Image 1 (cartoon, rainbow, N blue to C red):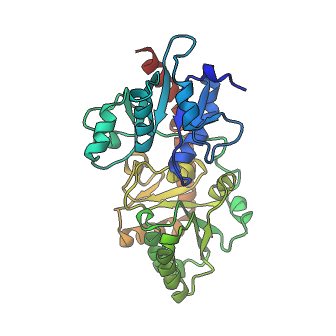
Image 2 (cartoon, one colour):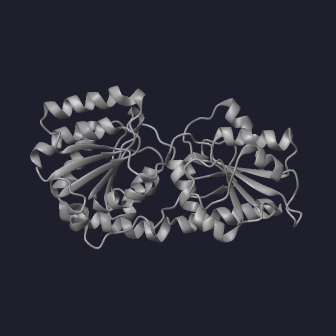
Image 3 (spheres, rainbow, N blue to C red):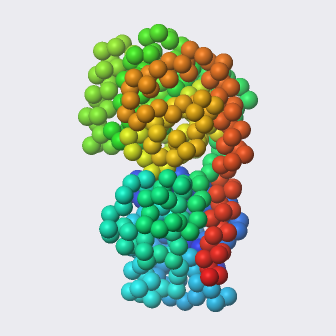
Amino acid sequence: MINLENIELIIGNSGRNFSGGTSITIQLLDYQEKEMNLAILGSRFIPEHFTTLNYLQFLLLTRTKLPSGKLRVFYTRKNNEMIQGLIAKYIFRSKIKIIFSSSAQRNHTKFTKWLMSKMDSVVSTSRKAGSYLDKEPDKIISHGIDLNRFSLPEDKDKAWQALGFPGSIGIGIFGRVRYSKGIDILVDAALKVLPKHPKATVIICGEIQLEDQTYKNNMLRKITDANLEKRILFLGKKPFEDLPKLFKGMSVVAALSRNEGYGLTPLEGMASGAAVLTSSEGVWDELVRDGIDGYVVKTNDVFQTSERLNTLIENSSKTKIMGENAAKYISENFSVEKEAEQIIQHIRYVQNV
């Protein structure tokens, strides 16, 4: 058990729903903990063996500096976490430095800009996200993939068969089922393509909240009308630990968001040896090598999506090579280990400035 007074790094964890940001936080923890004594502000979704704090504990801990005389660092990814840090620092006189990691690719509100202006450091997860900031980020640190969880299977066909779904080619899309994620774009494209390719099956894996039920029902109606309900399957939300097995079975992983901050699922698919089919949102057109790792299509373009989907299913040997290219590319350039190392280096720098 860590002595609380030796905790150097506190990581924000304020999300109510499990999200890509939550997944990133959890995957980084094992690597970050090897380098720094850390705790997480908020226990939701965090594995039990990590030290977590509630806000009162956070305030009590940060009343004093570290035994070394240095300030603790609070690492944030959300607006409300920046607010938590600023309240602690300026109202309760917490002895902290605050870093904000920005991944959003949109114009920020005046309030968000003000919050960022009060940070000790702002980092960005991509050049594109950095371009939306008022000033250049102090550091660009790309997200990485946990290669111990997501990796190229020995045999893609066997990995698919082990899942027990029909057909021999799996096309997966992962994430919450809602309009912004563009699930309907894949469904509409699949309705055009699947009748020509009876061996292909589409898997939709993600939480469906009450407000999105009508959205799902509209897709189900189209699927049923086309008699494809056995080949376009909604799995619902799956446990975090079950996801790698699903990714390993996919020949293609799609991510067709209409807007996206970063978007990790294509990279997880690539690490698992799947060719990818993405919109041009997030960092996907920055990171995915079009025609090498898969294809990047215009956002919200069903016609182009269906064309590329057809190509990926029709040319399965080329698609397999794309998946292998993608796995090698991710393992060499986008490991979570490398991301954790860069974050820790920057935290040390900020601590010492």
